[in-house]
Length: 383
Image 1 (cartoon, rainbow, N blue to C red):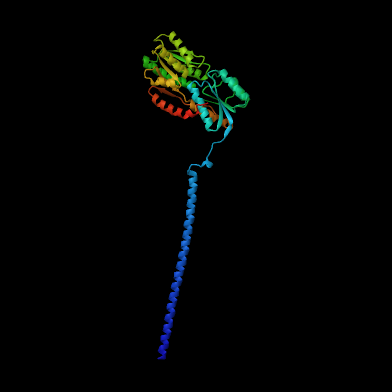
Image 2 (image 1 turned 60 degrees about the horizontal axis):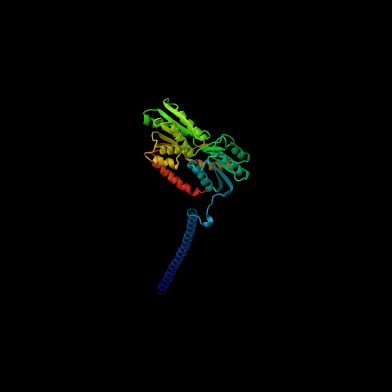
């Protein structure tokens, strides 16, 4: 009996120990799981915090590059206000030089340069005296000149050379002195292009390449001389075309109109077929003389696109049929950009700018272009 009791007691002790071991193991397992979970949660939280911080930093950096700058961050162009450009126009009363010089002013202003403007008023002596004053007073550091006379402007170019002032010419060349580069149309090509339209007009009028053509230019201006030469080189290829060359001495509408009135007196109705006027003032002078005399027996082809020329092209009854258009604003912009290169000791070269023929059929599109262009130039007209 005692033996059985002893065995029963041993069994109970063993069972108790086993039960205690199981609880202990469960407790250890639960504690370990809780600890692991807490550790994992802490690690995850830390990871999320780090990721969030990195994301915020990245977003902030992105915002800094995509959002408009604050007042303290505003980016400004280089300050070149210690440098002054001189811009010399042939005649600011004429649309072409006005547009050229306005484009010069706009480009200089956008790049932070100061500028002075001289209106030659179609008087090369006025250009010479103005440039001499600028050089003597050290008022300019570089200059763009649209010469009124390609030969007579040479002393002014040479004076700038002696003073170390870079010279660039636009539209009209200077025939002496050192010029860094020239920006302008190929004026022989301008004349050739105009002459081709004259020939087309003769075909429409007379059924063949025949008739009398008056070419109005001005030999003292290289641009007009080249245009006249280009036109004559094309027209002279047709033996039945009679070429009469006439020239003004001053590029004003008044003088051009007077010349055309004299020509109409010398050539009665039916003896003139086409007038090719080599610039805007000659074109407008011819148009005005024709209208004043009521002589609509001849057609007119011109060069440039002044307000009066564009108005004449829009009038279906006007005998002004077409004009070869240059782009003086391109000349002005490229001219100033070239001056900046000169000051930075960078190489420059001559640039030939484009031309186009505007007719009564294409005038509407050109008017739209001109309106948009002038709207962009308007803030810079007050010089």
